[in-house]
Amino acid sequence: MKKKVFAAAAVSLLVFSFVLAVGVSADTKKPGKRGAKPKANPLVAMLPASDAIATIDGKRFFNEALPGVLSGNQKLLGEIFSKIESVESRTGVDLRRFDNIVAGINITRKESAKFDFDPVLIARGSVDTTAALEAGKRAANARYREEAVNGKTIYIFAVQDIAANTQSNLHDPKAAVSSYLKEDIAVSAMDAGTLVVGNLARVRETLEHKTKISPELVSLLNKKAPALVNFAGKVPGGLSTLLPLDNDELGANLDSIRTVYGSGDVVAGQAVLSVTGRTLQAKQATDLKGTFEGLRDLGKGVLGASRAADKQLYSRLLGGVRVSTVGNEISLDLTIPKTDLDALLAIVSK
Image (cartoon, rainbow, N blue to C red; front, side):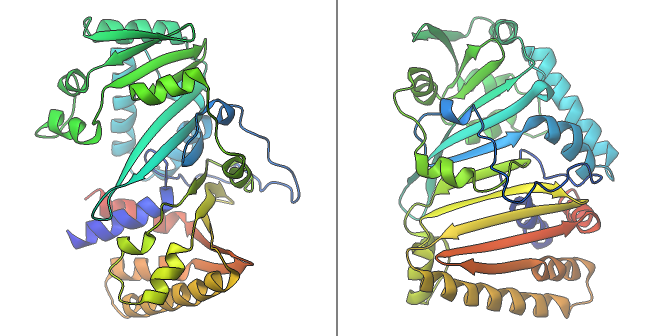
């Protein structure tokens, strides 16, 4: 069980906001030209004010990344595509036709170092949104309600009905769905090829378009060239409460990280994740660099001393983490070869 938890955490770090994983395929994407200004994603401007934003290249994800990362596990790949086809048969929506996906996420800190995440997604592609919504309504058997906002119709589906209709291998699929979906799901067509999905309040906010993403977050999002996934966000105060820390200075340095940005991609046949955090002062970034490097080297040494294949794998992963600073920014960059990513997925899927 410990092996699975450790491996799952490592995979989660690699894929970040990917639905399944950052794929490693052939060298199909060449690095962007230095100094080239990233092209703004038009869907980002359609999002309401949010604490964090993420963009996903849906076409590359489904056509390159997913088949690439699961090239060594054709059974799992077939099961995933079977689920996608099942969704299409029940709703009329083929997820593989969404080329461009963006998410705006509100983050609320609760007691006991817990956070609530309130996302809204906008997806655009070669999809007939009117036909898709009609199919969804038929699948709901009239168990939905409607609301009009700015000339657009929002369809609201109850969580209980979604859970009851969910096909899953889990012992209690209804409980599983309800554990992730706390509110009813709202869906609306923004235009002929664009859907917006979230809870009713967030979808309504998107359609009203009275607020928008802050220029600061848009600027951070565009600091990285467009990749399979790009992200930027504000960090809720109190990162130190997420870790069992006895060092007040380290906690203060962690709490000084107020914004983060980065990307995940496939370059030269390797999975690459880059995360940068901005601290209040340059010294805090420098101090964190020393701490992270010390923890990396300690973990690498301890795990590398083991003869177990999984421990050797984790040691290599830690050894691949590069830590750097520029002014008040601290960056962690991780590069994973295909063989190691395959090994991680093999551990998780057992």
